[in-house]
Image (cartoon, rainbow, N blue to C red; front, side, top):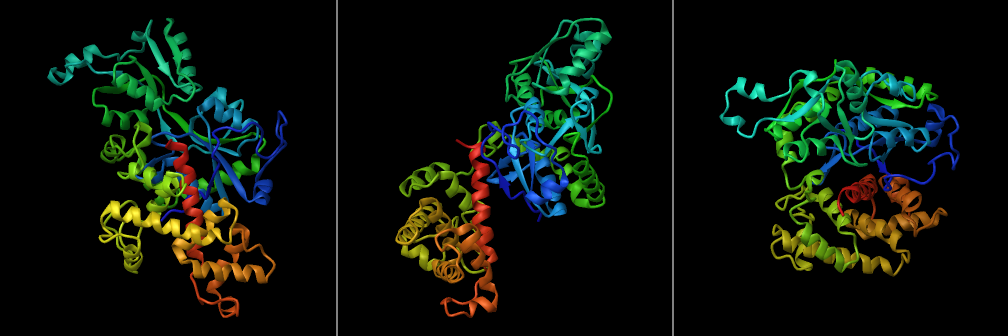
Length: 469
């Protein structure tokens, strides 16, 4: 299982630099400073290829590669999001990230502002156009006669492209090459190439331009599209850093060299850019937020039940995904059952006669969370902190969490704060030096599990908040 980036910033953009105050130009930050800070901040964008959520799972080509990079560097990778390419570059220059982790086309114009990694992929820019309305009843040569195959035929045509993309630059050059005007319209901020392709398919616009690998996958879903007309020679795509980050660039290239020796690197590419059947299923699914989907089949019930305990419904969804991946028939090795993985006595105590019934299971699970909230409200006054203790208790039981609190208090840590305090002593409960101490009533616990559990759910919640209102 690939490790995933551990943290994410919730705001799409920030008013000032993350690391350098409000200076117009950031001070030099390179690999030594990143290592000392303990995290690498990666700028990316969400798309059906780079970063998205599907059936509750965080996915994406660049997202998974960041997971490989995090393992290689052994430091946290934190993600910030930009609306478009111009914003990615601006955020990098302003010090709001260390790296653009997105497949940027390498162009001469961009090289003036960015330092690119070694090439990650090769692609071409292609024209995205519709086949004739009755194309299924036409002969191949008849279809070809209706399509643009010669760039000269673009004279006078209007082509919509993503704002800040390399497609604009290429079309301007092509216009000069053919000696005729091509009308280029940049889309509004935040409109993606994939959305423009959809507009072509749905007859809202006539043409757009996309990288060939992206266009080919999209045409597997929108079968009325043609993406066979190349308007560029093969081009390299890569990630990018500031020109001053020379050591970071060397580190990224060393990682790429190493990654290419392992099968995971190629599996990730094939997963997102070669498997057309999976893409069609994902793109057309009701659980794909980029095309207007939801997290799970139970979203309405989650919204209703979470309101009863004053939880964000997306946090409840994150907990259920972590427990069962939304499988109502899930059963653990320990005997926990259903969506919220309730043990049979717990399920029965909170009203679930049939724990495999999604409605009964969710209602009982929420009642259990409410019981835990009431339990911890007597000791943890801060609601945000209490939430961490509730989640940890849901996984490990409140008795083990109380043991960790007593250990924390005995050693001068704050027993009412989870991160960097109680969680440290939760980890120590797998060590006999600690679980045999007099403060510990419930003995040994595999403390890494609840610690990871809390962090995983909070991180997943952060991802969900970016995609789902």
